[in-house]
Length: 301
Image (cartoon, rainbow, N blue to C red):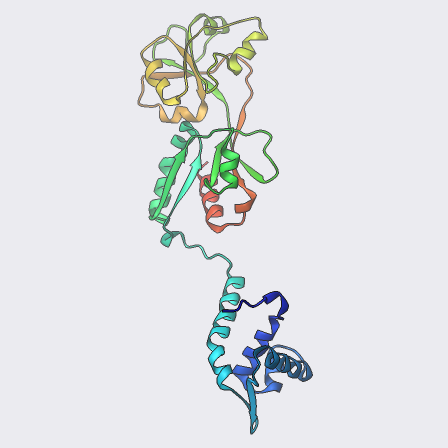
């Protein structure tokens, strides 16, 4: 079948064909698409040339479609209806009937913070949507967003490229935790001297033994001993509850530790807070499913 170059065709002619086929009158068809009768007559002439057929023949007061017009009308009219539907509602989105999987890149502790409520919402509003939680890899998550492999990334981000959008979700800060009855803590407080005299555990993904607390201590000429480093937040509660180690955790994590034999305390340093944000690609900024997912997470946070 010979391919037709649509760029060489005025597709408004198809609208004129639809009006002529429906109204079977040049005058009424012109009124229907808000053009003058001479313009409609001109469109009919061009249609006849395009299809190499008269298409419409005057019989009495009506313009009757030829056999060729009858043959092409169903597909042309259906195509126009598809275009109208697409333009009126570019992307229909009904969570209750959607069957898909959303991939989200985030840390274990943020996932722990949002997943219980998120799964509850999905069960009620979108029971056929599955979640895929993957670790945030700062070297690659931007590419994963751009390629549509993940819908969102949750975490603390800096220097995002222009095509990545960001929405702050909550402000986070460090608090200290230790075992119940720890000798260094009295009334949920600890002195700076005692804070540095006991060994510490440190969460780090960088395979080092230095964190923001060490930077703050250095300003006082102080140093703590890091007796343990881990790259998983949720190994810390068990370790801390059964030792004299001190550690710092994000404050939101404390809500998930009530069943451990732990107590919290304010760290005796002036430490900055930091934002937890949601990042997504500008390519999906107006995608209804992505927008719906972002709104759910924002409400939870």
